[in-house]
Amino acid sequence: MFYWLTALSDGGDVFNLFRYITFRAGGAFLTALVFGFIFGRPLINVLRRKQGKGQPIRSDGPEGHFAKAGTPTMGGLLIVGALTFSTLLWARLDNPFVWMVLFVTLSFAAIGFADDYAKVSKQNTSGVSGKVRILLGITIAAIAAYWAAQYHPDDLTNRLAVPIFKDTLINLGLLFVPFAVIVIVGSANAVNLTDGLDGLAIMPVMIAAGTFGVIAYAVGRVDFTQYLDVHYVPDTGELLIFTMGLIGGGLGFLWYNAPPAAVFMGDTGSLALGGALGAIAVATKHEIVLSIVGGLFVVEALSVIIQVLYFKRTGKRVFLMAPIHHHYEKQGWSEPQIVIRFWIIALILAMIGLATLKVR
Image: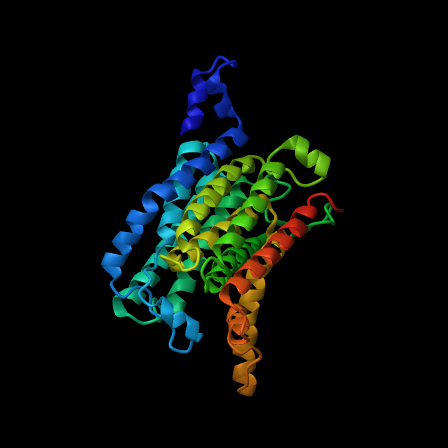
């Protein structure tokens, strides 16, 4: 919205600042951060009054989690509200990728909200049927994938870019949409599985968002893509504003989610943020890099898949409990140990993912 103030500029005044993505990204970050601080406590109070007993705690979960009973959920509303508000204020609203990513974020937030509402209203951990969630997620992701493909350059449409081997493009053809669906839905559910400890999911999400903000800005500039020898995807630079809004909103949420958490993100936040990361990866043609940058989420998801498949086959468990962060809890690691060490791993993986921009 603020971008349109450039129409008032003669090229040498303060309105000219709104032409620059970096300036508007900074504005989005501060706007989302302030939004989180202003509305965080009132939202928590409302959630506590409405939810009563708060988020149900798994009866078979780690014993330390029973002390968290009564903590309200749906805190993801704060993050989603902050990043949406800041994006609408600071991004160019004629940019198709901005609207595509917002569509995915808000749609997955709606799925998560319905799931959280079902859990707190019925006071059990079942929520919305898994099949319904997956079906809705696939539908949303398919729309987003087709949407993105319409705005990719002709030489990149329906193609998969391979990091490091930068001259390699794999033509997926009609398989591009199913592939993109796997990326978006997989990312949403992987982040959802990671969200099991206070502060565990939000920091790696912010780290991944910051990384993809840099990638989006780089691949959206001709000069940067020529220097880095990566594929140019016009208009993706505006996604930096979205990612900075996510980081600002995430920090505002973390203020209240820091141990002991006053509010949980819930599926409202985890599905929305995971879906957003997947959508950005599809838009920027860096789907494979997402598996590196979001490697922590991949491991969390794989630990659940391995546990389920191995148990069905043998009746035994590979991990003491899945996802894997619960395995370490069962081994005696404290919650802060797990959270901070996982943050460190997420940061290392983000640096490796960024390195793919230059290495060939």
